[in-house]
Amino acid sequence: MATAVAPRLYKNYIDGDWTEPRGSGAIENRNPANSDELVGMFPASNAEDVAQAVQAAAQAYRNWRLVPAPKRAEIIFRAAELLVRRKEEFARDMTREMGKVLAETRGDVQEAIDMTYYMAGEGRRQFGKTTPSELPDKAAMCVRQPLGPCGLITPWNFPMAIPSWKLMPALVLGNTAVVKPAQETPLSVYNLLEVLNEAGIPRGVVNLVSGAGSVCGQALLENPGIKALSFTGSTEVGIRVSEVCAPLLRPCHLELGGKNIIVVMDDANLDLAVDGCIWGGFGTTGQRCTAASRVGVHKRIYREFLDRFVARANALSVGDGLDPLTDMGPAISRKQLETVIKYVEIGKAEGARLVAGGHRLEGGKYAKGWFHQPTIFADVTPGMRIAQEEIFGPVVSVIPIDGLAEGIEVANGVPYGLSSAIYTRDVNAAFSAMRDLHTGIVYVNAPTIGAETHLPFGGTKQTGNGHRESGDAALDFYSEWKTIYVDYSDRLQRAQIDTAGQIN
Image (cartoon, rainbow, N blue to C red; front, side, top):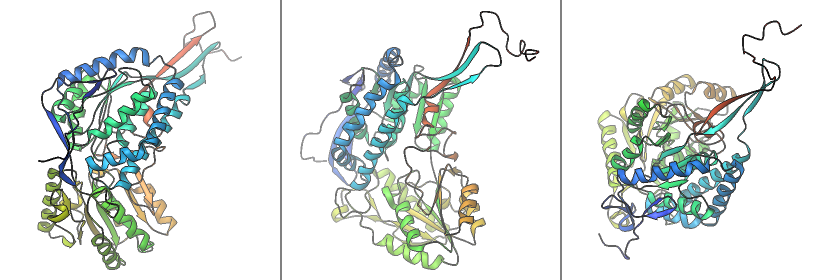
């Protein structure tokens, strides 16, 4: 494939230097809207590269954990300031390598900015507890302490936001890190690492190795020097990650799949609900773990909602994300496009009614990219595969429901439990839904996407293993509690034994 200029050859970032990879070969990073555009060539790192990075992180941890947390936070704050200044540049890079529209990539960088500022604040808020001892002349307290080198394996759909979710809490707590970005979108993580380097992060505290998950990611997962591992990706891979970590008794955080729903009640603001379902279903080309790939609609308004929803989907402009007129960009890759096409065929074979889209976009401005029409299936039943399995593309299943009870039953009737939403004007229905929807995130009169960085992010069931990202909840994974007792009585005291009879 031709490219206008010689591609930039990127290196790994290990021990404070951009380092030549030991693995042979390189991975092409191409624009999914125009596969002729070669964004860059990135290392195909191997186990030796990973081992070098882990060793650097382990060495740096000895000193980094001793840096006072407020001082660590000052470096992170400087990184946030640099991200602000370079937001537009990084957003454009992200659109070129990932495909989503520029407004969304600006939002992705903004989320990294928000998380970085937030975690800088945690440098002075790593609160422990003090509590009265049951014995006299004795103090009792607990404090957070870091874990050591952390392995961070990040996905392609939020290539700067999600790495920031993992990196910033790990760093402010005194951990070091080795990051393995998705091979489809490494450039955005490189940009984040350049900012941390410029902000003054010490050598070895953050390391980056680029490569295939089956080689580079597997080596990071298996390296015994990694003391905690955070992974965002598919449930299938997440289970394998858990299986490797378990015998090592290594903490692992898994952020996995989703099959999210918007429930639209008969009293909903219909215009608002349609707006939310368009954004929830087709934002980021449906390539979000929080995408609203199911919509449960009350039968009383089903036909009216469907007519409006289809009209809006058909009016979406699909194209290059750098074009300001584009509403929806391409799939990330040929492979992901083929997955979408496969599920469209599955939906038709299952008897769902195709009412919008359903085809790959080809020719003209679409000839060099991985584009698919916004697609809607109507009259879907809850047990159909298109209503049960994560597609990760612009395909939405509309399911008729009789009322709130059935809507909640349908919502909960999938293996995943990340995000859910309800549109209603009935406060009683809203609070019932907030209580009964078995998901980690619930929205009322808003779509299933739009999490904010100061609140916990994560899901239930096969969406994860109970840990949360974002907010102060993220601190819990990247630290462990140390309980401290200080006896200043100058005599032996025995808890639970010497307490009897001490009150006169």
